[in-house]
Structures are given as structure tokens and as C-alpha cells.
Image (tube, rainbow, N blue to C red; front, side, top):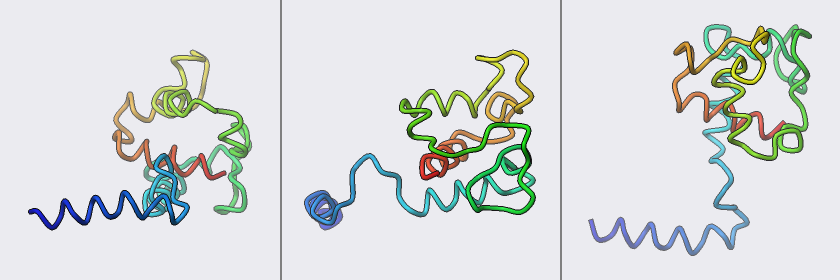
Length: 118
């Protein structure tokens, strides 16, 4: 138990020196978010949005998913958009992924982490 605390403390000291920012998601979280965004049984973002060079046959119903950090500097606003776009735009055709239980909180967070890389 004590050794795990020492390891955690060492990681806190070493990570900043390696250039890993504390507010950046782990690469595995981004990869998981990407997989969910491209999964036709989950996020399926590619059905309506162009997403860089990812996926085949991107849709063009929604805006292209690019420059997401610039477009959504407040991560919470982007997360709310994925959770339920109709809260801001009642005529939105985007599925309310969180509200309808299509994606759970962890999955939405992963997708948002991935979108922030675009």
C-alpha cells in the first residue's frame, strides 16, 4: 500500500518533466473515444460529420469536426452538445447520446477527448 503512494508521487514529479500536461487525456482514452466515434453501434459521428481523415464515407449533415478546441474552448460546452444537442437547438437532428442512454458518461468523455484532438 505504501509503495503505491510512492509510485504515484514519483509519477506526479516525473510527468511534468516529460512534457505531459495534467489536463491532457491519456492516449488510451483518446483512442477509445475515436473507436466509439467511428462505431456504427455507438457514437457513429462519421455518419453525419467529416472527421479529418478518419473513417469511410463521412456524412455531410453536420458540420465538419475540425478545430474543435478553437470552436469549443470550454470543454463542458462540447460535452453538453454530445450529451443532448437539442438542449441548445430544439430542431437539432443530432441524437441526444447521453440523454437517451446511447452513450454513458465515460464514453461521452472519451469521445470529447478524441474530438479535442481534431
